Image 1 (tube, rainbow, N blue to C red):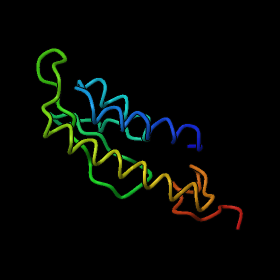
Image 2: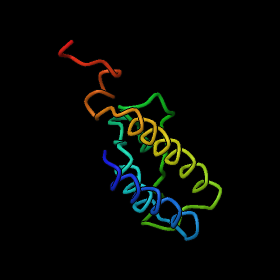
Image 3: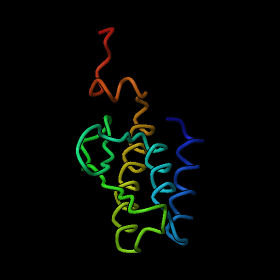
Length: 108
C-alpha cells in the first residue's frame, strides 16, 4: 500500500457514502483495502490478513441490487477502519511484508 493508493481509497469511500452501492461496488472497495473473500461457508465474508479487524459480510441477494443503507454504513465503517489502519502503517514506515510479520524485520 502506498500513499497514492490510500488517497484513492479514501476518495472512493467518501463517494460511496453519498451514493447507492451494489455488492460488487463494495467488494471492489474491500479488495482495495486489502481484504479477501474467506473460502467456505454459506455467506460471503471478507477478511483481512493485515489487521485484527472483524470480518465483513457483504451479501449478494439475487442479481446485484443496491445494498440497504444501514448495511452499507456498517460495511463502509469497517472499510474506513482498514483505511485508518493503513494510515498508521504508512506513518510508521512499515511495508506490506512488515505488517504481515507483525512489524518485525526478518533480517534482524
